Image (tube, rainbow, N blue to C red; front, side, top):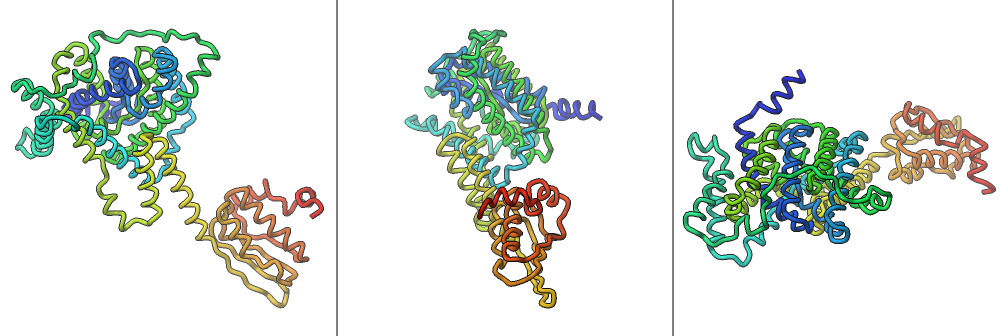
Length: 497
């Protein structure tokens, strides 16, 4: 069974994975160079990292078909470290990032994705689509009309080529776009910006090396804050991207295995002179849209990337940026969840606020972690508020025995505890009070404290209190933290009051 699953992951879609890998490799080159520039390091640092991370996550990752490499979100976190301490400290921080990610994988932090609501994922996707499009604007600003013409032609090829009989289904249209526009630019001799204008491509293979920094507490204290930030942001972006690819392919993935794979890849990247990286939603969408589904597509992308930049760099340098801009605009259009605009009228206001807040924070800060954090926080607050409204009570008075029975329904926790207390009439002259909790559930210490206060207040008024109907989970937390049936603790808490 395991062998069959492994063979399917690797060889279940050979033609589609190989062709998609070629497209991704071509699209990775300018982005890896751009991210190196952002981080303040030589272009080869980003290119070596993209090769290494793509290959290793292909083998060890938990999400077949997902592309990981050097990313802008990670590059932004490296700027200060590189500027202050230099490249060697960045390599050491990259390796420590990997170690932390492996540790997080063993702690099963990948399971935390279950706390990220659909509205946050939608906001994350839409924000990334906007950022991908915005990243192309510098290539379309203050340029000649040739660039606009080439970009428009590229989009035409991407969207129209699939309609051609037979061949339109066999070859990915983004690959046709890149090859065609490169050939046209070279044949006509167009003077437009190319990949070579972004930076010098490496002409040697990477070699294994150990960062030349002292392995001391001082070094660790310098790189640890950066490594922790890189580890968290890298895993967050990787797990969010894995969730999106899960949806696009309608297949599951192992998030905890992906955490460990990202860690192994970053350790290896630091050891060959590369920067830290993570999953790339843009390249992953290119891969899926081009027919990639298995691990082979990521492996091909990494290997072909290295071969092209080292052995074919003269040809790669002549690829017009307009061709890659067209591909990335296609990615932006394909990534954006257009249904979310239509759903604004149908979805609850709280869901819309979470989605829009996530988009705004990510776009303004260019930090995915901030956006997701805000989205998850808002979603949690809205959920807690909504659940608290489902808690209500019924009460009845037995005049003969002077007994008031309160029957509670719903969830009692920190946000509904005040409402729970407000249901009682502590000034009512009754001899007995029964609190029926058979249809309620206590979740936290705040809820237990509210129950304690209710019992104590009734006893002050001279009523005898009986609690019935507790389920096992509620009874456990009340027995552990409750004090209403522990006279010595009540005295200690209330003191002389």
